[in-house]
Amino acid sequence: MGGDDVIKDPYPHELDEGTSDVVIDGIPADNEVLAYDSGTGNWINQTAAEAGLTSLPIPATSVEVAELGTATYDDVQDYVNFFGDRTLLSGGAITDAGSGVAAIASLTAWCKETNSLTAVGKFFNYGGDSTAALTDMTTHYIYVDYNGGTPQLVTATDKTTHGFKLDHILVGTIFRDGATLHFHEVDKIGIGRVNRTDMHHREEHPAHRADGLVTSDGGSLALSITSGVIYEGVSRHATTVNGSTWSYWSTANSGSTWTEDTGISALVQSYNNIASGKVSLGSNKFGVHWVYVDLDGSDLHILYGQGNYTANQAEEAAVPSVVPNILTNYAVLIAKIINQEGTNTLTITYPWTDVFTSSLATDHGSLGGLGDPEDHAWAVEGPASSTDNALALFDGATGKLLKDSLHTLTNDGTKSTLLGISGDYLRIGNAGITDHSLNSEDDLLVTGELEVDGDAMFDGPTITFGVNTNVHILGKITLAENAPIVLDSVLSADGKYSGIVEAGTAGATLAFGEVCYLKTIDSEWYEAKADAAVTSGGVKLGICVVAGTDGNTTTMLRYGKIRADTIFPTFTIGTAVYISAATAGLLTSTAPTGTTDFVVRIAGHANTGDEIAFEPDNSYVELA
Image 1 (spheres, one colour):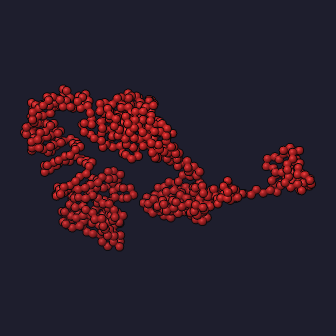
Image 2 (image 1 turned 180 degrees about the vertical axis):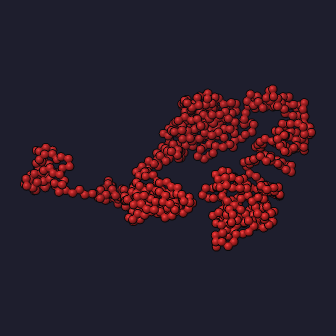
């Protein structure tokens, strides 16, 4: 306003009578105010100090926010109370003060005055302090408690003790390992907390399916897909894709560049040789199709499988490692589809309900093309019929098995046969590499791997597996009446055992025959000792049968028999065997006595002076 500008004065009686127009002398400069000069009757420019003004803070409770009608909560303080989040703003560094004590440096923070949603939130400074001595071999959570305006440190060994309290602020987490503290401090993320949550999800998964997006067979190799929801971080995307059309992706140079075929509406019975491009499936082979929906929810993408599969191979196939960027960073896997060449049948599995492992039929009929020697060079060829007891011989010139009517089986133990006839014996592999021999009718010797997908019956009195044989049983074992599991009746020498074992990790150097316990905190095996319940009482026990060192593999006998002449004392046959309270890892015939906290727990019974039946009692007595 210039010198002749006028403003309306709300108090005309204090100026010229009969007028509400005011003359302004000049324009106020920065940091100046208009002040009324009663001597001249004019408004003049003055600084705040010249005008006698004092700047006062405005309480947050006096600053209103927009509201509908008369709202219970209606000012800036209310807003902060409800939308503020307890947080460590600065400081709070953790140091090891020795003797299991942690020192917490001074800090600034914000939290509620009390543990109430409606409590007032306040900024405050805390001068720091030291914790009490922390419990050894235990994780601790360190908090600052507002404590009604007198902040203090508190600790807990359960994160839920203070974790949900609105007047407690997490400073860090500490694990005490003897004289050493292992710790980390919380991030001071303040207002970035929501963004940190978003990035947390994005770093775990670029995106994930939350609902819907169920793929089904649309007939004639077409697809149908329900609507659904995808989350990208904390962003929610509703999908509109329905499976009517999609893009196929393939590469001919191991992923350096990709080809997108758009507008496809039926599955293509091909696979992607990533070194050369798309290839049609072989006769009766199986193709895999990996189905993705992009993050905008409107486009469907399918990645060709990268093999010309048998049925079993197709179901065992995992997501390819060579994938276009759009599928790794801008799409979500929603289905795996298996389709056999020459058919319209689809086998559809979903990553949120199924693990992609094998269960499809693996019989020869599902492989197809058995009459094609190029695909199946092992197919048997030769005369339309053969005599009884004929051999099937491998022809090195043609690479095929041939029916051979000229050579028949005899029971003289000299023929290396591939096909046995009832009444004779069958040998698979090289008998020279095994200790066992074939001399009886109907014997079977396998010196390599044997896989049986159907039923197997053994009528002989004994099934012997070689010393280096591992037997993997994927189904259940059913024992008939009077058909027990029998342990070796007599252990032949020191260092022998028979029973049920469990593989594990050693937490210390362990020797054969030492009784051990599984430590909960690291799931590793340590020598048991009956001077404390934590190392011998209500803990899982085993006896070491494969020696190991700290951090390396070991094997524990969990139930059975063991002979350890070197480490066992001389036991009394038939009597109980106890965990020693005097020496870690040893067993004794004498129950611990006399000392407070010692543990009396039976580990088994003596079969001989140097062999025990290991059958640990789950009950124990702790001496008072």
